[in-house]
Length: 179
Image 1 (cartoon, rainbow, N blue to C red):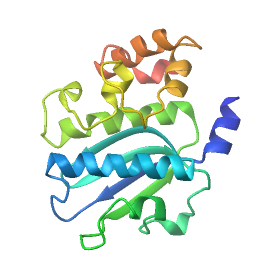
Image 2 (image 1 turned 135 degrees about the vertical axis):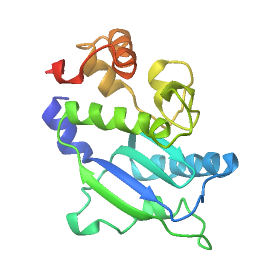
Image 3 (image 1 turned 90 degrees about the vertical axis):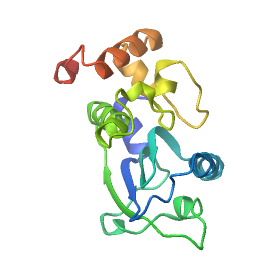
Image 4 (image 1 turned 60 degrees about the vertical axis):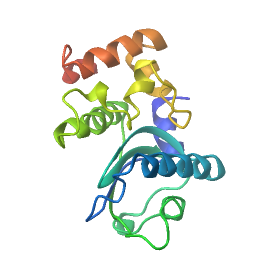
């Protein structure tokens, strides 16, 4: 699949869900949310490329079977709304389309560093509830598809891409030099 086909067929988006409270502060709620997303992913044909679940929100890079409409900002898609209990707070959603692998990489890095920016951990790799461990090969979140980015970074070589991905997260390589 060419890079153009990847972004045409997958409708890749960056989605942020924000609560006014610490709705997902309990570790069990984070796990429950990810389990529900996994079930919905399989049913709806959604590809997840990166995530971070924080106490007060969720950030996702996802490939959707249908494009999100611009006017859909603020409206939670059904596949995500089913992941929150009906009696709880509904998060505010913002979403935007991702058009290139370079942009997807930048978004993944942003997602993985959000726990550091929010003060949860000192190092991105120390945060459990993100997809970074799957990219590093230290834990398999079965709902995350790391291969498109790792192949892109490694010129087709997944392990080479993994090494480069880790260097980018450690700040040892500038992301502007990826073209």
